[in-house]
Length: 318
Image 1 (cartoon, rainbow, N blue to C red):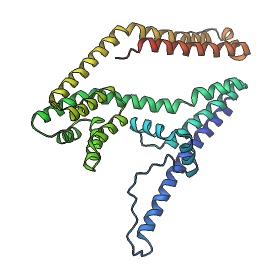
Image 2 (cartoon, one colour):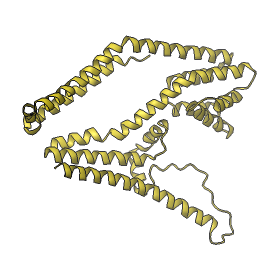
Image 3 (cartoon, rainbow, N blue to C red):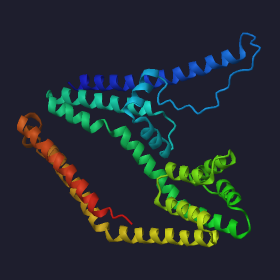
Image 4 (cartoon, rainbow, N blue to C red):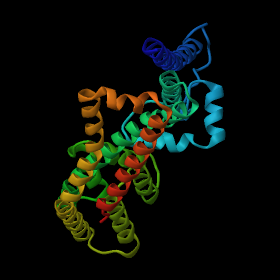
């Protein structure tokens, strides 16, 4: 049984690898064909250059049309960009489908019932998406930590007499990632002729940060009403640092609740493992009998619900 489950899971992983390889191969074949058309055959006319951005969600045409029809491609593409990942939206969807199939097959092979198979599908399918969300949160957290220093650099450049565009250029050159990359895109958009207001709005669309929205709002209001931009941005930087201080105090005050949540989450699993190791004859009916399996599923669901409730209580927004 275990060997069969391993073979099925290995088959699911193999299908995912094949899908990703086929998508990359299709992209490479198309790029090679375009180069051959441009430079081969002694063509006298100038090669046709592709100046538009490649907005395909998948290198497979039918899959690209499917994602566009379901209207999920733009949101997945934005999430992947915010996570700093270069894969297409179609690859993420394919990975989620592969994990779902693997969870379904594993649940059905181990328990021989439809319920555990569907539970395995539901639990494993979101794992690639959750990993991308985790990477996005890490990147946005890094942006938020570096952003006050970037604002101080911007304020220093403005007080030195530089224009706002030149000060943005300095931030794009001197700040660490990911602040440098995002500000560089904004500077490049303005140099290509995009209106400054639109470029700043695009920056807030790319970066999920409330501190950045404070900054953009202050800049746009100053452009409409006038005032000392350096002083406004300095006050914004002070506000952001004060918010970080309050967040640190909140983490200190909620440390006991978060530790309680971790203990209550790990304790049932630890007790189950200890009972299985020390008294396997007592715990075996929980795995072999139908009632025991149902009890484990109900207990796991209630445990997950408790984790979400505790997380909601200790996660205070500022």
